[in-house]
Image 1 (cartoon, rainbow, N blue to C red):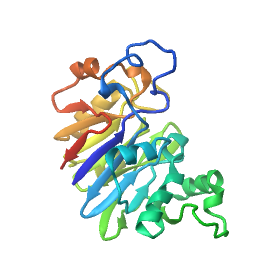
Image 2: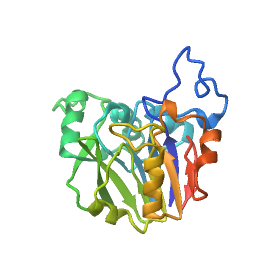
Image 3: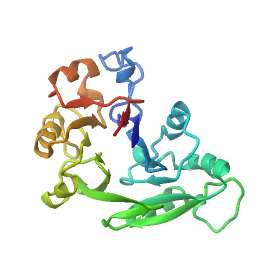
Length: 253
C-alpha cells in the first residue's frame, strides 16, 4: 500500500496574507500545508479521501492521472469544495466517478453542487455515482474498507481503515466501540489542530494520548492548524514513533 499526504492543514491553518508569525513567514516546505486529504494506492485501486479546495492543485502536484473512487469524511467545505475537479478524471477515464459518503453528506453535496445532480445532460459537468455509507464495512471494487465513526463536536465524521492503515481527521472524540476497529493498525493518522484545547478537534496532547492508547507502530499527525507552530519545533516534542505529516509525504505500508 502506498499513501500520499495530499494536504495536512486546515482552513484554520493556511498562511494569512500580511501575517508575519513564524509559520506564515517560514520558508520550510514542511510548514506549507494545503487542506487535509490523502491519496492511497490500495490493492490495485487509487483512492482519494476528501476533495478540499486544493484538490486540483494536489492532483497536479502529485501527477495523479487515475482515480477509482473518492471517500468523504464529512460535509465541511474544506473537505468537499474541490469536487467539481473530478471532471478531469471523467474525461480521462470515460466513466462516472464513484463517491462514497453518508446520506447527510450526499444531501449537502447535492445542495452545493446542484448542477452535478440535475437531470440535465449538459456536456462537461462532473459525472458521479453515489454510494451510501451506513457504518458497515464496504467495498470499492473487491477491496473492503472499514469506516470508523468519530465525533467532530456534535457532527459524526468517518475515518477509514485500509488494511493496516487507519486515517482519521476532524475528531475530538472516539467511542470505545469505534476504537476497537482501529486497534491493530500498524500506522494511524490522527488530527491534531493545535496545542491549546479546541471544541471540535483533538489538540496535540489529546492526539498523543490516543496514539499511546492505540499503540501503532507508527503514528502521524495531520489537519494541523495555524497555531500548532513550526514543523521543526513541534517535532522535538513528539515520541519516537509519532511524526508530523507534511504535504507530499509518501508512505509504503
